[in-house]
Image 1 (tube, rainbow, N blue to C red):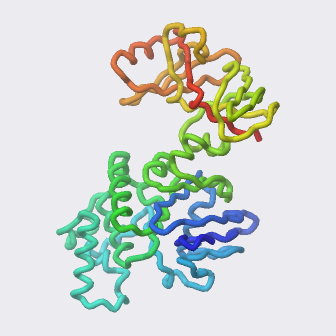
Image 2 (image 1 turned 90 degrees about the horizontal axis):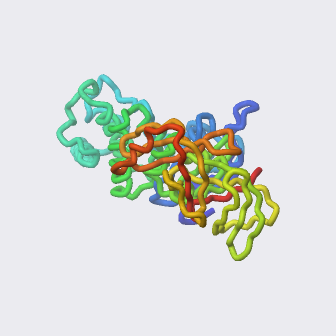
Image 3 (image 1 turned 45 degrees about the vertical axis):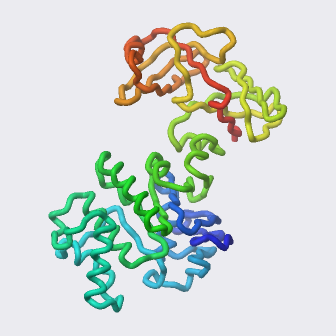
Length: 365
């Protein structure tokens, strides 16, 4: 266990009957870190969060909070607090009453409690809202009140179970920025659960990607996106095009891979794959360089035909049909001046180029 860790999972498993919700999870979360648990529904991320909170107990293993084992600590004795997706704002209480609800047995004087309520109202950018009723608040304001109610107890760890899931896109993006700023301002550990890849990438210092109860990879957002360790992680974090290949040469980190679709590709690779290894060659949609006139012969590119396209405002996505491949290749293109004209010509020829550092090489399981 890392002595700087605020949370440490030591071989933690949780079974519900024959279902393994969490399977031998062992990892640490650092003090002051914004750490996200990311994965599809049913992957075990919320179960992990609820075990930290004390709402579920591990079937085996131990969770340590600030160096102390939690198996003997009830939820109300743990130095954590939780924010839920549905906010759980009490309709019969005003904002001050909602924020103060968990402080009823704190022993603070009325004056000290009111002072602390005023401090958290400033923190969540709702000064002067204390007397408002729950039905007078917008969705974003209700979320802020739920945060304030959790933060007023000054926990060592704040647990957040998809807290932005009920907000519309624009408000959700605004709250993401505010949540990150709040965490940096307070300096406490945030453990955040989400199934939204973009949200996790935006908010987190590190992300644990989960599937079927297992923690597959833990890394910083940029590393997960640019250099994932497996096909599942590469496919779950954003969008990826995969091509089958076999390693034909590997010297001094320079790898040559033969593929049926792209031909022979070359890349610098930190991972070592023996010659003859079957691998996936993976390229992000935005890493392709589309050209609408034939490029020079010595460039890495493949010819295809334009398929359907989708205009997304600042960028467009379009598909390219390529020989020897059943599924079209997805390409992302920034909507620069004149670029949209080319996308309105289906079935026209297009050449997709790439650089060596655009390629991610993954083991073929």
